[in-house]
Length: 111
Image 1 (spheres, rainbow, N blue to C red):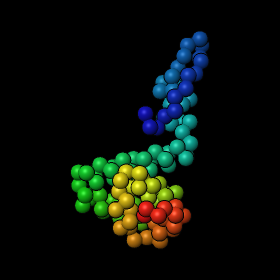
Image 2: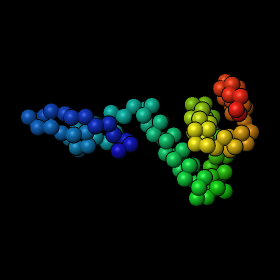
Image 3: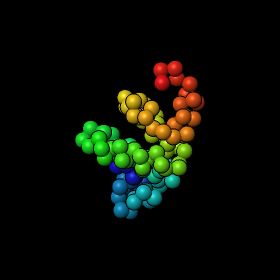
Image 4: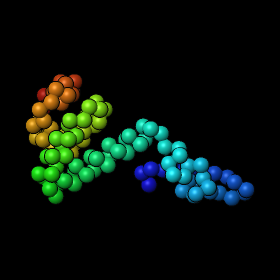
């Protein structure tokens, strides 16, 4: 489950798992803000990857919306995702100072 961290909790000589309604970890109570943000990024990138295969036109629109986002960490994750998933051609088509800066920081002669 993306939204819950599981741990065992001893209560009255019984073990309650992290997905029990009585557990303090239920309903994402122990999920940090960073965990939630990373999960959101992962969901977005997952759907983007499926759109590249099933609906490239919609993928381009989604990519355009993603690159307009101002969260620098998300943009770095997006750029790395594109590179890691053999979409360097798409990465290099993005017209953005953020991608240019990211590429300069990588200093990769293959790009």
